[in-house]
Length: 370
Length: 196
Image 1: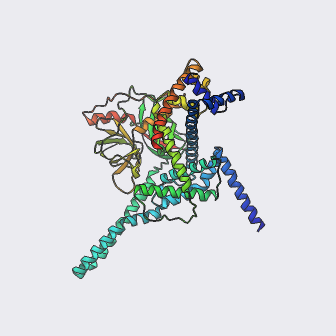
Image 2: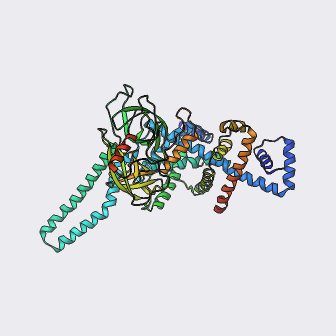
Image 3: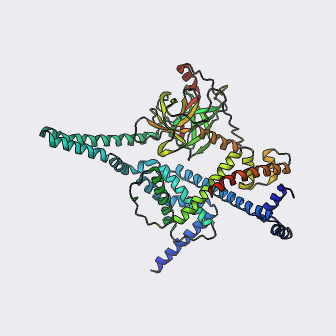
């Protein structure tokens, strides 16, 4: 028997796809041929692993799906706002030492210098605590704005629709595919607005909660498809300290905002290896904005997860875009078609100003409604 | 007294039905489990230095652990689902905090817990081979990856796969599948045997 046929037979034997006569014959063969016996054992082990792989994978999908469904239905309060109380305690714990040191320094000064200083030191202490609670105010405010509540209703959306979230996104394919963050799309529908203020209807093709990446496709006859996309998406990782810039729509008036900074860590929040830490001023609404390097390649997608520190933001690594595209293309979404990425960087690299005025045509403000 | 024991019995039956549903990939059962237990895990994680996303991840792993447990023949759950899920989540979250170097003394929680060491070891072992299989499949490239996934994971027939991939007949697809399978096995066992 050829190897191929043999393996096929073993597989049929293991999956109980044999007549009893054939089965008896095969078992005799197996008993008398140690090599074949070994192959059966090995292949069974392999199939078992494959089986548990398949089970776990489909169950993980089921749980993610269920979770996202319930989340979208408002089953849970998202993000960490529900434990604001704890946050105060956490912050207090964090700064306890600082405060304690400040207090003891204050005490030391008070003891060794005049009564005047002694009367000052408690107030110094008090100021620090006041500042701390200010910080908490700021954090709270941010969490509220993060939701980007927009109440106005515009033309391209159904009359009774309500905007519930928004952010930025960017075109990756001339057919109208746009990458953004999943958390930007809290509603069931979405529109995108280009840099000229034109609204276009878009379909949510794919959204993945775990990577926080989502794919939209513009579906609007007013959409004028560009000839090409002037940037590529970087496959390799980006070095520490590399200069980066972003274009997004963090403001409510829908004016595009340019920001510049640098890559400050190879991992994101809590050591997340799928993200970078960046030093840039990112505001709510920057979520989904592309992050470019000096060469004008997209190296990441901002998903603003800053918590305590000012100017610290996080961006999903561009490699995750390839994963998403692979998944979507695999599904062979007939209606949407396959995604093809640009292979050339045609953006003008010498002049940042003209580069930006070109790039902004490919970056959209995104609003999601119910 | 009688009423109480009837209620207990009902609850017990409910739990059994849920577990049965879980074993059969029933989405209703999964939904019920999320609805009834996620928020307490969320509270626990948030109160112990974690985020909403952390809670989501930890709970999903706990669900997978429970799922794989109910699938095995030797399955017995000696406590309430709630206690089980919580124990796993607590264990996982402690481990995560340790990894991050953020552990600062016992975690605050009022829930009762059981020992889950054994189950977690089982989970870790499966996790390792899952990762190996995942990497092996992904390094195969196309069309091998999709072909094998179609056959072994999605249980499609050779005829159907041939049509999907554009092979002229099932035999050619079979040939290709065989080649792909040999490559996958080689990749898998190379890693798997190192791990052992």
